[in-house]
Amino acid sequence: MSEVLTAPLVVEFPFTRSLGPVQSAFLTGLRERTVLGVTASDGRVVVPPTEYDPVTAEEIRDLVEVGSAGTVTTWAWNPSPRRGQPLATPFAWVLVRLDGADTALLHALDAPGPEAVRTGMRVRIRWAAQRTGAITDIACFEPDDSPDGEGAAAPHCDAEPVPHDGEFADPVTGITAPARLDYTYAPGRAQSRYLRALADHKTIGERCPSCRKVYVPPRGACPTCGVATDTQVEVGPRGTVTTFCIVNIKAKNLDIEVPYVYAHIALDGADLALHARIGGIPYDRVRMGLRVEPVWTEGGRFPDHYRPTGEPDADYDRYKELI
Image (tube, rainbow, N blue to C red; front, side, top):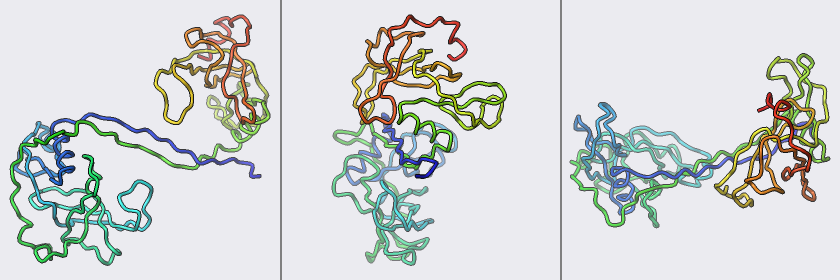
């Protein structure tokens, strides 16, 4: 077994936001296979449209419809697509200036290889079969091999944009933008020892040789003195709630009913509070100074939660420095 543990971790946060009139019209238009831009104060047509002028910061609302074909202004080849990207096979990231637009739209170009991509080539939108009012309604771009699309100087490249009122039936008013990070976490030697001890129902920290404080979880170095900590000290298992919060929003993939309490707990013998869930007591009876102990589930590698011990509450002066 390696001395240092590793584990795959995922941090995911789906961000929900409302849309203003310009973004709402743009995304609803994509659902209807219509690409809208907005006219800036200097006459340029901005695609994707912004609600404020990129130069003057003035609010802009004059929507126009632009073409579904355009010209590649620059590109980069992506040989190894990642999860969530537009295509599962190698593709090119391209900036495309759609006909009638003065700025470029970033998206994927489906091409057999980098030798098939060039700046100035003509491309057209490949629409998704199922469209919901999102940028993914443009499945990708593809080479425009039609007679009118050959070459960067095709006649319709300078087509004039057409004014559009931005009105659609059942407009899109909000979106959910997923943010996700997949990575491999390596806790280091100090926290690897800490995690292995938890599996044996023990909690260990490390003492600073200078200030003598015991840190749990251990960090391998004292955050105050900046010196290495290698003396292991078993602490707890009981501790004191120093502060807490009541959680009222249920987290995705977390099988815990709300409301519940998450608290900072100063384990006996430790000089740094760790955080954990409090159970075995109604959420509205959790309080600062409450004495608690860990509860392990069968086969669990770390405490599932902490519960009251039944001891009298700790005096505030005993834990005030750890809040």
